[in-house]
Amino acid sequence: MASQRLCFIHYHELGLKGRNRLAFERALMDNIDRNLAGYQVDKVRRISGHLVVDIDDGDDIQAVAAAIAATPGVAKVSLAWRCDRDIQEMGRTACLALAECEPYQTFKASCRRSNTDFPIDSMELNQLMGEALCAFAPNKQVKMKDPDVTVNVWVIQGSAYIFARALQGVGGLPVGTGGRVVTLLSAGIDSPVATWRIVKRGAVAICVHFSGRPQTSDSSEYLVRDIIDALAPAGGIARLYVIPFGDYQRAIAARCPGKLRVIMYRRLMFAVAQRIASIEEAKALVTGESLGQVASQTLDNIWATDDAVDMPVLRPLIGSDKQEIIREAKALGTYEISIQNQSDCCTLFMPRNPETHADLREVREAWSQLPTDEWIESIVQDAEITVFDCLGYRMRH
Ligand code: ATP
Ligand code: MG
Image 1: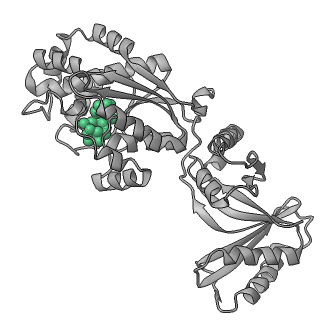
Image 2 (image 1 turned 90 degrees about the vertical axis):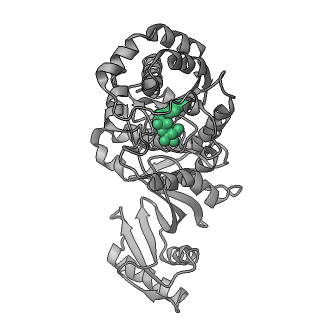
Image 3 (image 1 turned 90 degrees about the horizontal axis):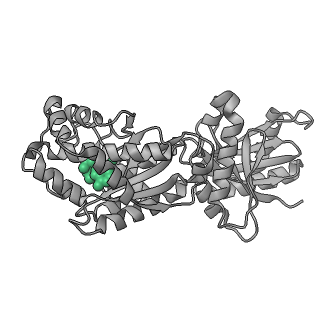
C-alpha cells in the first residue's frame, strides 16, 4: 500500500470530561465535518483517542488542515501519513515528514505503539527511525531536548501514523457543548472578540445588534454582517437580531436626565437582550466590556446596567487590555471591519457629561418613569431576524 495522506487531529480538554467524553467527541466530529463540507474528503473518523481525516487526491492537505484547525475544540492538526507497519516503509515516510519541515536544524524521532501485537517496542523503533532519518539528513543534528522538528511515528491498530508538520488549532471546546448565549454585538472592536471567545468555549451565540436606524443610516448593520461572516469558520453563530433602536434612544433622551441617558440606553439593550434570551432559551448575556476601558465601563455602571436584568451577564474581556483585544481582533479578521464603524447607536444622542459612577436609586427612579415593558415587547416584535445554518443550535442543550 502506498502511504496515504491524512490530517491527524489532536484535542486536549475533551480528555478531561470523563463520562461526557463521547458526547464531546461526537460534537467535535460533527463540527469538523461541517467545516469540511466544501472539500471532497470523507467524514472524520475516530482512532484511539484521536481523529483522522483522509485526504482525497483532489484536495490540498494544507487547506483542509486549516479548516480543521479553525474548529473550536481542536488543539493541533498534523499533516500526516498512514502507511503499513513495515519498517522500510515507515522509515521512508518518516523522511518525507522530516523533509516537509524545512527549514530546520535539529530533529528527533518520537515513536510509540498502542498495540503490543507489533513486535518492535518504542525504544527500538526510536532507534530504527532515528537511523533512517540521520541517513536521510546527514547535515542536520539530532537533539533530544526541544528540537526544531519532532518526527512522530505511532503504530495504532493495523497501521503506522507518521507526522511532523502541524498547524496550531484554535483550542477551546466544540460548539454546541456549552449551551446558548445572547451576545450584544456592536460593530466595534470589542464585542466581536467577546463573541468569539464565548463561542470558542463551546457556546452557541444568538447575536443582537442595536442599530441607530431610523435616526442614523443602516451602515453599522452591514458591518455587523461582515463581522459575522468573519466569525463564521468557528460555526457558533446561529442568529442575528437587528433592532432599529434610534427612536427609543430619542425617547429616552427626551425623558431622562442627560447624565443618565447612556445608562438608560444600556439598561434597555440588556432588557431587550434578556427577552430574546428567554425566547431563544439562552442562559446568559455576553458583552464586550472591559473594566475601566472607557469612562462608562466602571463597576458602578456595570452594577447599574446589570440591575435591569436578572440573568448572568458574561464579560469575557473584563480583564483584557485594549492592545490584547486589538491583536485578537486582527487575527480574527474583524479589526479591519470594526475600524470602519462610524455611526451606530452608540454615537447617537450622547450627553456631554455621561455618568461614570451612577447612583442606583436615581437610575431606578429614572427607569421607572419609562414604559419599558411596552417598549421591550414592541422592540422584540420589530426585530429583523437572520437565521444562519448552525449545527450547534440544533444540538440538544
Ligand atoms: P465595542 O467595541 O464592542 O463596541 P465599546 O468599547 O464601544 O465596545 P460600549 O459602547 O460601552 O463599549 O459598549 C459596551 C458593550 O455593549 C459592547 O461591547 C457590546 O457588547 C454592547 N453594545 C454597545 N453598543 C451596542 C450595539 N449598538 N449593539 C449591540 N451591542 C452593543
Ligand atoms: Mg462600541
